[in-house]
Length: 156
Image (cartoon, rainbow, N blue to C red; front, side, top):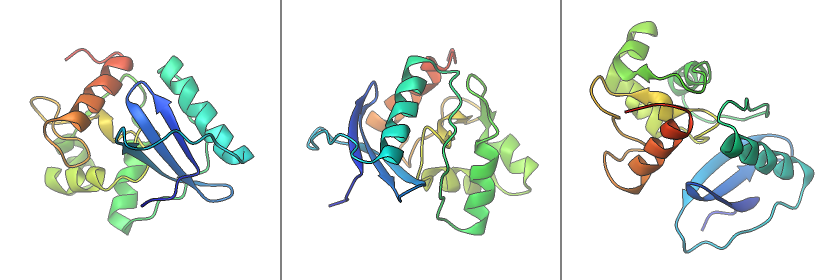
């Protein structure tokens, strides 16, 4: 079982926060089987505070040091995702053209994103429709993607 620095309630369900002493390393969407766990250290409290600000105001801009562990290609994609502002979306294919790769490769990198919401993979859409989210094309995770986009002003 994963060890979390905090497990917090949010409008999209429970979120598991993982971090080092001074860098965010992961956010997981958790099942209802987890119990809330309040943050104990200052950095984790700041992560939770910024998440709460985002859920209250979708234009809130995160300002957290993060540590993204992935392949060099994944880190390139994740860097591009962080440039997509709240309320704006990008297509897998257009993003792929920009960094000279395939839409499928973009989707695979999004699927492996360890810090969703803050590294906003939910803002990447298929040419038609929402596309997938965290490796799913239907179900609870896709509902989370839709909620996040609606929160940010996207009108499907």
